[in-house]
Length: 404
Image (cartoon, rainbow, N blue to C red; front, side, top):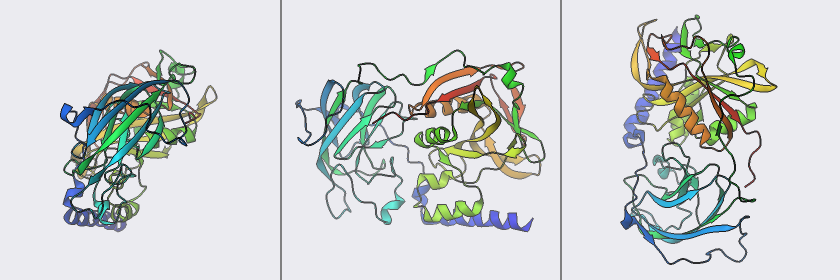
């Protein structure tokens, strides 16, 4: 009993230290959208801004456009719709100057120093002021670095947006001139990704007769509903979650405190707050994944647990998952302690898993299955209630990575 209490005390002290020392770093850094016409100016078209030595992407050029991005804009809508499998070549010139920076910076951004780690940027892997982009839904699409030049193979179809890697209260003086070229897929046909299908081989009531419908705690109390399945290798499963911006959750409190203090106060360090162990197939989860902006550290996050099934489906590895959305805290009815409160509409979290994973282009097929005697309403192991339409999401993963 003493060791868990000490561990919890360490956690609380660590979070208090971070909150007191860096109050602004704990707020959500929700990237503001700025698509006002004043921020996006059409410039005369040019054939190319690429140097003669730059390699031209394969395929036929179908579009060439230039836009100007001012230092006051976080994101602008280019009005360009991209098809999966197209190459998008983006080049940029120009300078920005931030008030306290020693030097101007170009589209590659400023090097990140120790003090700069306090800033939670839209893309933490890129420097402050760097040119960045995304393709698809702003709520789920992961941003990518552009810098001076970047040739990106579109993983999915969607609208192209470009932005500056800065927080919503941070602006630079200056602008970037951005040149965009879009090249049709080789063969002229968009790559097929995330196809909706009515059924998948082996996904039937016979399979669900072997699958527990709910996970449980160590004492066997039933908890979260099994609401999604993934067909694919372990490498493909890890790749799709990582690419979609999900973060692997720390196994214990000690790791969390270490990451929280040393890990640069990044978004990822908040998401790795420990996830309690739940059980399926007689063992704790094989993986825990979390996805969220750090609104209040551990108060709100999308999270899920996933287990490798002890059998295969038509020769493919099966992963069984339960996903919920933490929205606050409540009393644990087992011991009167404090535990996370989940959004009772768990179908919303199932849809969130689907949207984030399919945004990667690494999902081949999507299906939904309604088992016999579907679960509609129940309580978690801690006493919270949830409801569902009973459907289970099934995702079949791509095993090969598209060539860039």
